[in-house]
Image (cartoon, rainbow, N blue to C red):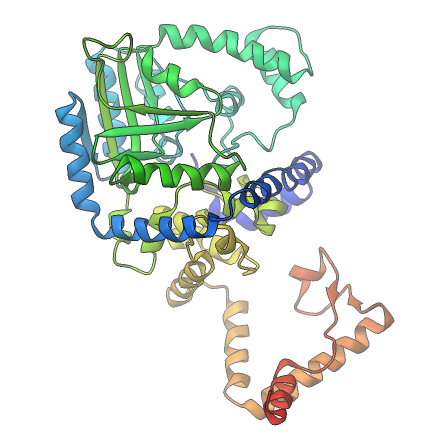
Length: 470
C-alpha cells in the first residue's frame, strides 16, 4: 500500500467534501458505538475484565520471549512449522517460498491487517501467485483495486451501488441493489476459489502458547474454509498476539467481540493446532505460522510499549470524532484512527506520519473505550514531542508554542491576556454566543462556529475557590 500519510490534510479536505463518504460515516456513527454500549450494559463486570486484560497483556509483554518460544515448541510438537520474520520483506519472502514449495498458483486469504502492512498481495502477484480475498469486504475492495478504510469493516466507505458496479464489472452479471442477492453472488464465486486454492492464508487474533494453537474470529465463516480446504495453511500474524493459555484467550475474546461490534461473541471462533492428523476428517497437510516483528520488539521498554496491548477491536476509531469526520483513507496507510496515529509513526517514521498524532481533539474518548485501557492520547503527545524535537513541526506552530511559553513564564501577564482575550471574543460573538470567523483559528472556524468563552477565566475561578477555601 502506497504511503499517503504525508498528505493527511489534503486527504481530509477531500473526504470532508465527499458526499457519499459523509453519508456512509453518518450511518457508521449510530452502528458500532451504540451496539457496544448496549452489550456492555448486559455485562456489569466489563470494567473488571478490562483491568484483567490490561494486567495480563502487561505480563505477556514483559515475558514475550518466553511465551513465543513456548508457542513455537508446541507448534513443532503438533507437526507444524514456525517462521520468525524481523521485517516485512522477510515475511513476504517466507510466504512466497512456502507457496513455491507446493507449486501454488492460487491462494485464498482471510482478512489480515498484517498482510496489508507488509503488502503481501502485491508481492505474491508480482511473483506469479494469485491471492483471492475471501472476507466479503476485502473481496469487494480487491475487485475495485481499493484498500481497507477500517480494520474490522474494511469497505465501510462504500455503498450498495459501488458493490453492485464492482460485481457487474468482474462477474459479468446484471446489476442489482439487493444486498442479499449481492452476497449470494459473492458466495457462488468464492466457493469455487475455496475448492481450487492451493494454499490458504489467514491472520490470527491470538496465539495460545500452552497448546500451540492459533485462533481466527469471523462473522462469515470464510476463515474456516480458507484454512481447512487447501493442502497448506499459512498463518501470518504479529508477535504480540500470543497469550499464555486457552483460558486467557477466552478473556480477550469476551472483550474483543463486545468492543468491536457489540456482539457477546463473534459467530465463528476457529482454532488451528497443526496439520491434519490421521483421525481428522479434514484439514491441511501442511501448517505454517509466520511471526512478524516489523519494529514491534523495538517498542518494548519505550514510551510506546503499551501500544502492544492492542487487540485490534477498532473501538477507538469507532468513537473518534476525527475518524468519524474524515474516514480511514485520510490517514494514508494501513492503520487508521487513534491506534493508527500511534502505530503508524513507528512503522513508517514520524517524518512521514507527523500529521497523524496531531489529528486528535484530545477528547480522551479513545482511551475511555479501549478494552485494554491503552493511554492513546498520552502516546500521541509523545509523538508530538518527537516531531518537535526533530524540527518537523511547522514554523507557525513552533512560533505559536514559543509565544505561549513566553506568556506562561509570566503569570500576571498571562492572566491579563487570558481575561482580555475572553472579553474580546465575547464582544465578537455578541448575543449569538458564537464566532464564525476568528484570526489565526481558521482551522476551526472554516468548518464550524467557535463558542465564545463564558464567565470568568479558569485561573480567576481557581483563585476565587482557593480564597473561599473550597
